[in-house]
Length: 132
Ligand code: HEC
Image (cartoon, rainbow, N blue to C red; front, side, top):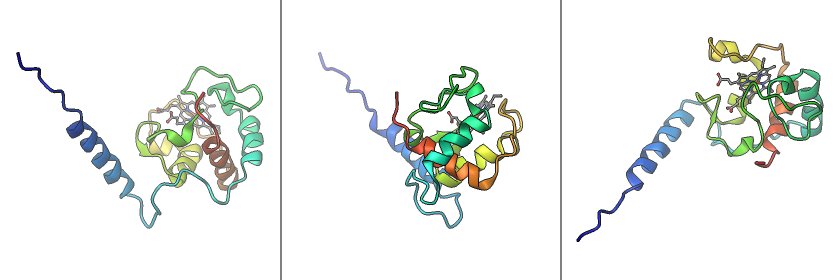
């Protein structure tokens, strides 16, 4: 009896190619490092609380951020995508936080009028979180 060998490699290669293709859509963007060099994580934590992101999201370390409406944001630097549609780069995360409805018109996440600077700080905080 010969055992069939399962082959996971082709699928993994396809996924990697897909992610690379998405990442290459970024114009003039460095490869994803999943850090925000000029964002301040402490200010980001305060901004996440101030804008009320935690009404919908679970965000470890942020006051009253235990929402279950939307995906939890722990371990965000290890995610491949933002909202399932953008590759997870600092610029894409900042764009999503500022303009979710422009990016995905049918998303339940509202535009909250987040400034560029606040979004940058929030992204820095989110990228500092370990997975639960
Ligand atoms: C009214 C509820 C609501 C509020 C308030 C809200 N979000 Fe969201 N958010 C969502 C939903 C729903 C999704 C999933 C979107 C999708 O997949 O289309 C989401 C997705 C996200 C994602 C991507 C999550 C993932 O798993 O890829 C991030 C990051 C995010 N929100 C950050 C924020 C930040 C930062 C704030 C505050 C400025 C905020 N959200 C406020 C509902 C909300």
